Image 1 (cartoon, rainbow, N blue to C red):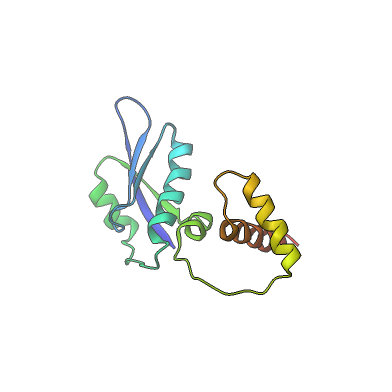
Image 2: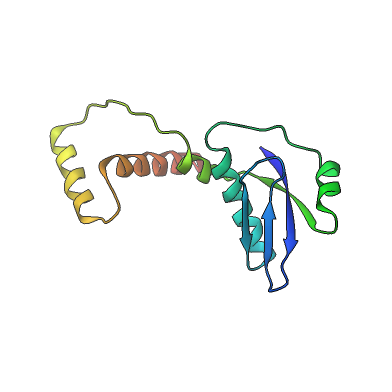
Length: 131
């Protein structure tokens, strides 16, 4: 999913970024590099719900941008996974493993069983891609 972002330099430094085709998708960065990274995350977050507005052409976005910079941005897959729709599922695990997971989760702030299992699955899938 490629959309064009408008990068507007700020007087105090940094860049404000918006996506004219994706309402509510905006961010900022202290440097252009940071703004580009933040833009991919913001775009991924806004597209995570599955709604994919039609993307304008580079020419159309440049007309809207005036003198601001325009860059093509691909939505962050990581942000899309984090913020995408959740679905409740039933799984079967050995009771001892479930107890181990629950004990581990108690020791880690901000983590619950579902978050732990999702993170473990994501890490496993990601490590498989490198093979």
